[in-house]
Amino acid sequence: EPEVTQTPSHQVTQMGQEVILRCVPISNHLYFYWYRQILGQKVEFLVSFYNNEISEKSEIFDDQFSVERPDGSNFTLKIRSTKLEDSAMYFCASSERQGNSPLHFGNGTRLTVT
Amino acid sequence: GNSVTQMEGPVTLSEEAFLTINCTYTATGYPSLFWYVQYPGEGLQLLLKATKADDKGSNKGFEATYRKETTSFHLEKGSVQVSDSAVYFCALSDRAGANNLFFGTGTRLTVIP
Image (cartoon, rainbow over all chains, first blue to last red; front, side):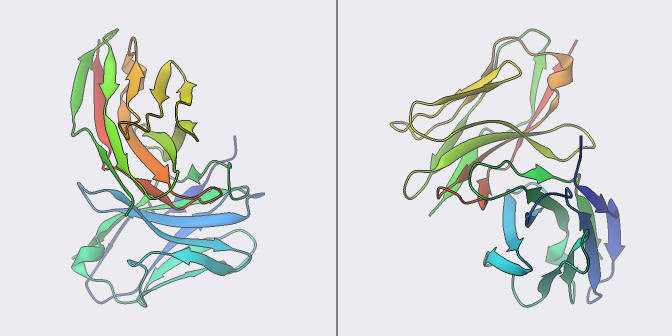
């Protein structure tokens, strides 16, 4: 069964550094998402992406965050200048369409900012 | 606003025990409700869903009924197996056609033989 893949599984970075989290969504899916979960807290929506542009974003997704689909297969989340509070598990997801179309999640990337 | 509150874990049960994981929600409008499961080392997977009041979602022996009067969507299974050990997330989407999900914190279930 096709799956969403995320790399790396664990990323350690120093405060102030830029990180790029990578995702390969399922190939025939059109909608892409990033969620995150800070340890012990809820899984939170960050952003959704369709047709090469952001379709919705949360308050968390401020100017330090950006997303990109640089080619036909990858979907990336960039954090420009990481802060300690960005440490979390970041989940990528994709869906075939909006509405009653289930989200397929990747295994997540654990980001640790030191 | 929209939020989901679910039972704090972790939950440890013996094989064949009855499982309930409580979930209540606050939403504007008429949300759709979901349970997602995350097995060790894997991503979140949709377990079941219900899109309107009194609907029952079911899958793999798990059930949850959308109760508008109590704003709840409790997850139940009559007889758990070791392979059910995972983290379970309750979630809602607040608009028809939206995939912006609001999740709970997750409840870790461990089933021991």
